Amino acid sequence: MNTQTRAAPSRLQFFPVSFFAVVMGMSGLTLAWHQGQRALHIGLPIGHMLAAVTFFIFLGLLAAYLVKLVKYPRAVLGELNHPVQMSFVPTISISLLLLSTCMLDLHRPLAIGLWMAGAALHLVLSLHVIRSWINHEHFQVGHLNPAWFIPAVGNVIVPITGTALGYVELSWFFYAIGISFWIILLVIVFNRILFHDAIPAMLLPTMFILIAPPAVGFISYVKLTGGVDSFAHVLYYLALFFTLLLAIEIPRFARLPFFLSWWAYSFPLAAMTLASFLMGAKSGLPFFTTLGLGLLFVLSALIVLLAARTIMAIAAKRICVPHDTGGKNPARAG
Image 1 (cartoon, rainbow, N blue to C red):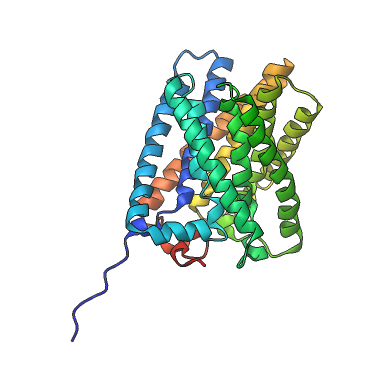
Image 2: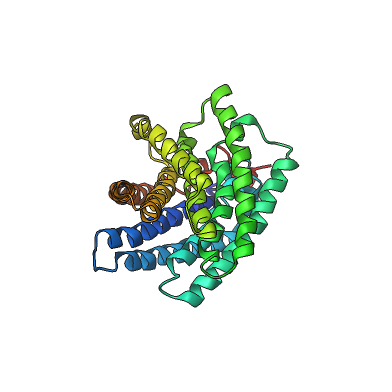
């Protein structure tokens, strides 16, 4: 009798690239508290402390993913070509861009390096994703979900730090790409939602990503132009509408089992919080600042919940397993 048993696959092989959504959510919380502590006149450097925590979380996730790249390159390549997971790969470059904004007041040289690396990597990943969409051989309607906005969102994030660093024209370049593809994808995604099968439960939290493009687009547009004009108003109020639309769906989302995709709730809500603070500062109307503060406390509670549920899922070994990839093992993706 053969007593040899096949070795169990390493959980690192199934370490999902979507884990970097944690960094996006934490970065959004950091930036939101930067604004919130000013509005609340809090002397404690809450934003700076959160920035340090977020940076170390990023380093830990990046180290794990680089080890995965070395040990399981086919798994990483599979994610790059997976019809669902490829949209999450740019969360790495977006994390770099958001961290650059978090570090701008703490360590400017580090912020510059993070921004340059993030912008360059995001351009490469955007070209890869869009080229894959154009030359697709295996995409189906069921693969389409709001996570496809992620590459577009990354482009409109670039100007937030880029304008502060003086790279105005380069910032406009990225903004034009992001805002154009957001409009295109908005139509396609709504067609999928309205006329095709329901989005799988695992990916349903990505519906919150609908908030991010107009909210971040508003912030970047104001950074680029210096004011709130008619187009800026359209972006902000569209983001507010999506926030209200998804808020009335909270009971439905609350019934979902926990997936790592729950972190998709965090960054869009953070973007709306930041957009409200900015609208309050530019308009001088206290309503928007008050709204921003209310969203900040909701966001903070949400991040605590997400962190707790993630730690529990890791302890129960329900993360870094094959089904975390969105229904198909990325190492075997075509």
